[in-house]
Picture 1 (tube, rainbow over the protein chains, first blue to last red):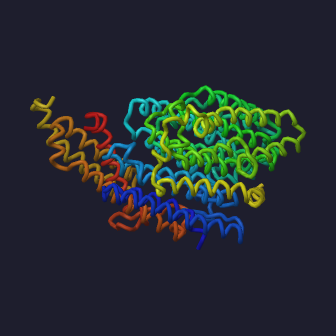
Picture 2 (picture 1 turned 90 degrees about the vertical axis):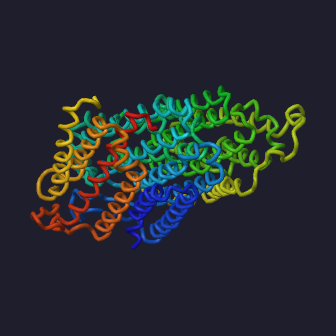
Picture 3 (picture 1 turned 180 degrees about the horizontal axis):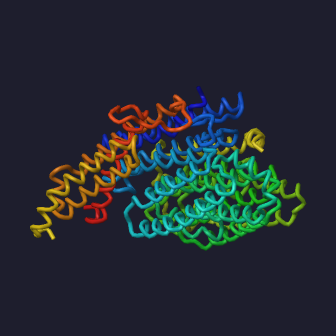
Length: 487
Length: 138
């Protein structure tokens, strides 16, 4: 029975998405969205429990026992990511229940929830699928839905950012489609496991074709997941979008393409094939550049949301760094970083959205003394920032620690210096906000204690996300062991 | 263009013919080439011609946008439920899609009902997109 759950997840989200325009009531739209997300979370937890107790499984939709049926594969990473996505998305939708009216025009709120449901459905589809063309279709749906949740605010900056995002990610989709066409003409299959069987026998005859396919996939998925020199769309899009959209885009959407890259590099191809090509060196170089330059660009930002968006580029650098190491330990750490960063960054975006809403200014300089006016919000922000910087126990530290261990394991000690430099740069841009918020006589002068604090029910999603973050850090060993069973 | 009497009179004959042809293509999808998407596109072409020749108000008097969006959503939901049923019961247990028999509606499995739904969805969406670009979403 549990084998049908992944399919039911996607169906429930898509069908509730199209129930919303029939009722066309804002309140019902929100409740339907929360309800469907809760159902997805419960089903995803069932899938996770079954994968832990019984093991990974395939589900063939359409025509079973043929090579052209659509194959879905649920292993350890897929089940963890699906619980993570359902959890984060549920909390973001609950947060948006009270706050969406401040940011989105009134008549568009029901459309917003259609797009959110479609986006989550396509993200789950990308995670579950074991079929290249199926994943391409879901990638297209997710691109259009994420463009929609940026442009829905209807301001000048949003339209500009969305057109930039649309053009760049369409180029990325084109490259992915080209790579899929190439790999199909080479192997005659679209199913990842079958391609793997063919390619592992024949790859020595086609070294250039394999390299071209890998480069096309890396660049195409790199555009969508903000790999360093292709990140131009991210700061505009993530900072101008409504707060729940920013949290969803930064927390989940860019991660799923990095996971697709992991699937293609290590499941379609394999560690041995990929290690023979130059592509891993390119990925590790771009990841390191992202870690350093993303942080440097974040230091120079004047607006809070823009700074947090640039921090996402730096954190995606860690994921690509882990992928580029080319060892099971490195890739498992990259997946762990995806998990840790998803909960942390979405909570940070929700926190900064709350602070911006109450202060009424996007500028970092206007947030001085905010620690006295909104103590709880800044405490939660500080906790998230600590994870980004790498304070022990929190997931940011764990992934940096294991990435360093993975570097030492393959005798590339110089890479550890990059991780350390990036951590120090993270301190430089997160600490001024915290220090100016809590301390300093001239900052706190004239501020009234708790004058801008919001009611506790609006804070609850952020508190849950932060609790989840601490738990991810606390149970990091179990999560990492479970993820490592996939390789 | 709206005042050209030749155009108006010709279109009065053309539009029903186009719609009949579209319905033919949708209903023959399980037997011959064609099907929901092609037929739906042709159906929406007839709406677009009516919009261009007789004006937007004429088309809006026949059906308004909220109705179109509701019809489209209901079709999508039915499509999802039928497809979910066929996926959960492992499809038709055949390696290839069955070829239908003329005159027998369910002879092609779920292909004909799905074609009809796709035709309605495509016709609605094509016309809505045309109208959004033509009038700027007023």
